[in-house]
Length: 279
Image (tube, rainbow, N blue to C red):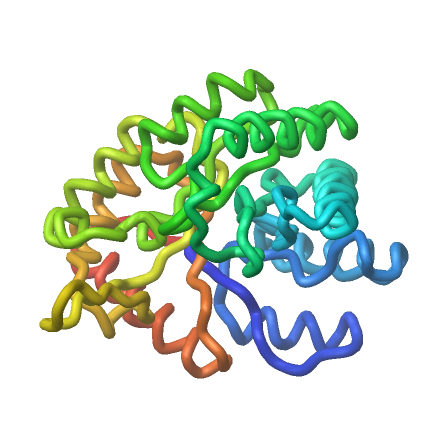
């Protein structure tokens, strides 16, 4: 696997970016530039990244295509199309978003997230995004969330079938789907199930840790690798067994360069002890 993440830290020039990227030791990253970046500068940054031998694995959207506010929904759809077109233009294999929410919080829980009407709108929205861009190499994907679809491997497979577009593929964030005590207690088995069922479709994977508090009724929290309770050795073995050897596996949601470095060291150390190849 190509272990990496989001490169955090101050930079303004291509040279400053190259130095920060080298210090990160990442083999794969989320794109530091996107469709809203000056085109020439974005091209220079991506070229410098590839010259360093680092894979730009995904570019994000992070807007709500299911918003009940028409203006917000249209803005999200237009950004998703622009980001997918950016990925296609620059050889980035994965453009990732979440499905979106019907509530006031763009990525939040709402009972309407699970209605048939919302599901049909989700399918139509994804089809519209892909059909508007007609990508040949880049794929549009949806990162799973705890409280919206797709929230499991079977739901992802159903959505892949219903959207019915070759350039709609899967994104794996297994921690986001560990949303019940049963999934937490059988997390390694759940991750392997996801990889077995979705492996051929997975374009990018997020790697985090998770812990369940000994509290009522149930509190499950995301945390950095090494600070939770997941069997990361078993999970890394599953990733190695079921995904291509050059599959990107990205650390995320840390707030400093030092935090990313510590998480990288922890995961790379586990991989080394168990003979799991990591580049």
